Image 1: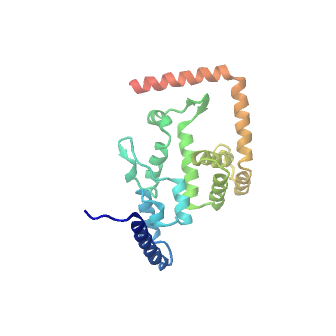
Image 2: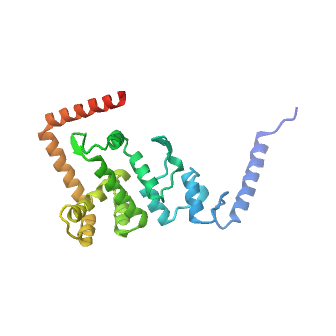
Image 3: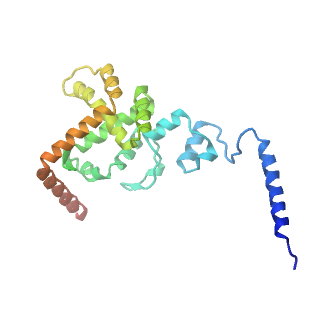
Length: 235
């Protein structure tokens, strides 16, 4: 049997590592096995789960659109979500609805109102508001929406809450245009975006105070909502 001196083996291994480092030093940048030809291929690979170090840093447009509509998997209403095209508005709506499973039954029944965490919510309006915000981010119109989203991300807020925050800045303009028939004001909207997250945190505080003062009623509403969801699952 051939015997190998351990010190000799260590020296040989170090020689091999040195040769590898010498070869790597000849490359201008770290080697990647996959080099997408364009942004579309890069995005396709990213949505398929290819590690980022193999395809490089996403472009600004890719980062923005991925934030607006992240790649997902799973089945919703017997549809394979991974096969949906986020660039298609109908597919985008399906992906947005899939992010709100708590509204799935209500949307199917076309309910006007549900109780969620003790609050009354119109599920269709809620999803529609998400659609508008996602559309703005997807098209980068106005660009201030994405700039605000990046600022809130840097501040530590999570994506879904950021979409709600952007929507809260947009609601007054939708109310003016829809309910009052007045022209919306882009200046007021941009000003509302600039006041985030302080304005959002202020509303959060008021909501919490309201819940504390009406805790019994809110608890009853939550129990009723849970019972309704159980009945729906049984049927």
